[in-house]
Length: 132
Image 1 (tube, helix red, strand yellow):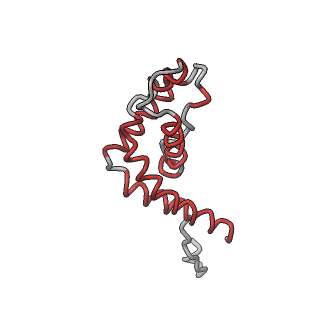
Image 2 (cartoon, helix red, strand yellow):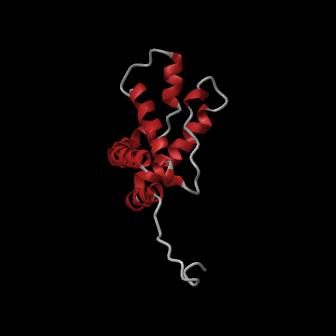
Image 3 (cartoon, rainbow, N blue to C red):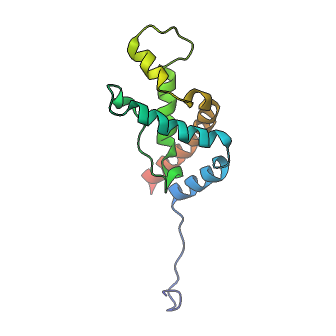
């Protein structure tokens, strides 16, 4: 309507949406992406309402999944670093946590690749938000 009235407007893409679209284009068809999302849901189900509920994954909207997917991937990376798969079962809580991981350990290649890409993109996004 404003263009019809002679007022010119420039379209400025939101950087976070642009980054999310790049991630969607790159990772949506990756078979490990679906495995990762499913595994996160299973881990959440297994941890909620238990003493380990504080380790449950963060909520990520399915509608705008790629906007905040980095939060979920960072959570998975931290959790997997604290629960090595090759250690002996020495503590009952650690054994319970390890049993709750579902297919998350198999998603490690996806997690590493996504974080490699996301960290630089998020740093650029953070820098541009500070500078305006």
